[in-house]
Image (tube, rainbow, N blue to C red; front, side):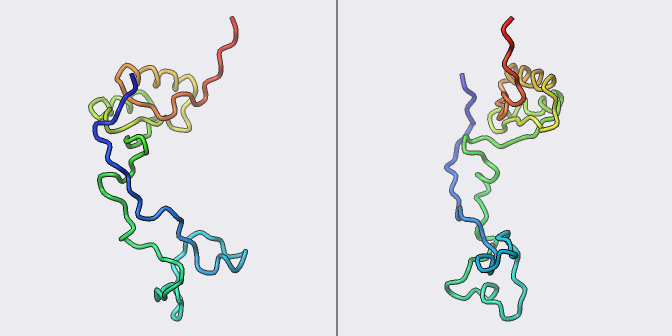
Amino acid sequence: MAITPLVKNKIVKKRTKKFIRHQSDRYDKVKSNWRKPKGIDNRVRRRFKGQFKMPNIGYGSNKKTKHVMPDGFKKFLVHNVKELEVLLMLNRSYAAEIAHSVSSKNRKVIVERASQLAIKVTNPSARLRSEENE
């Protein structure tokens, strides 16, 4: 049986488009990564109509759905089995994600222990080779 979250609130994003940098559409040398305009006459900084939107605190996510994945769980990065035990009581709100640096041998142990504790693992099949025919 699949592990389901305790509560699954609908995630509403106030803005899904990225904020793009002023004049990044005009020059290739200006990348689209957001930088706050600082110029005294800048139209974007002065919030003129028809200009790019600037990020501000009003675009923040709902506290209840912040950092929540679409399946309703929050991620918790795990490097070893001992860190997995932390999620014992929180297995319905947090899902374990095995860190990038963990070896395939230790991954198997973590995934096995997670299934015993009924903890969801977001990347259980990472770094697993298909078994050779014996």
